[in-house]
Image 1 (cartoon, rainbow, N blue to C red):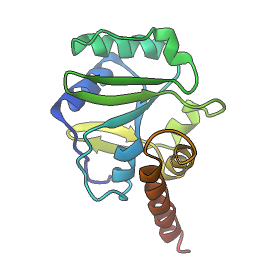
Image 2: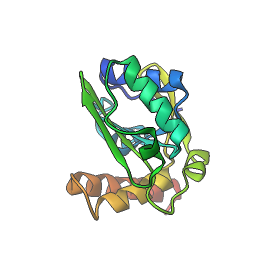
Image 3: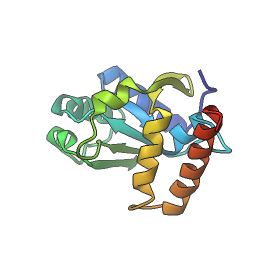
Amino acid sequence: MPPPISTTQQNTKFIRELQLAGAEFLVIGGAAAAIHGVRETMFIPEIDLLVAPTVRNGRCIHHALDAVHISPQFRPEDVAKPQKRIPVFHLGIEVDILTPVEGVEYSEIIQRSEPAALDILPVRVIGLDDLIDMKKLATVEGDCVEKHRADLERLIEMKRSQNGK
């Protein structure tokens, strides 16, 4: 397993509450890039999570938010929709909760995910190939295109070196 990444105490507490509530998620974004070894720092102040797109999971996320004294600003049904972004930026927590884009199956991504650690918490992180695919999408639209493009270049280079090409 790769070395753990670290984040703020508030993020760790919230992610632990997600686990206790039974939420299904995996780490993506910059934290996943760091775990895969393409970021210079292992401290990631904002965590991106890909969640299983189900109403049940929406309820679990609601429960976790309640546990950290944050009033949910979405309905559990919203989590079942594709390409949904639920920002949780309150009380020191900086977590983006995302659902898969249309046509991408969470069940397939989680099968290809890998074990990792976020501070002291065991988590699942998106696999290298799926992370490359996500970063490709992020370089076309959205915020921080240059940061995503740099990650994408490093991830592709890492994959090439792993394949001996």
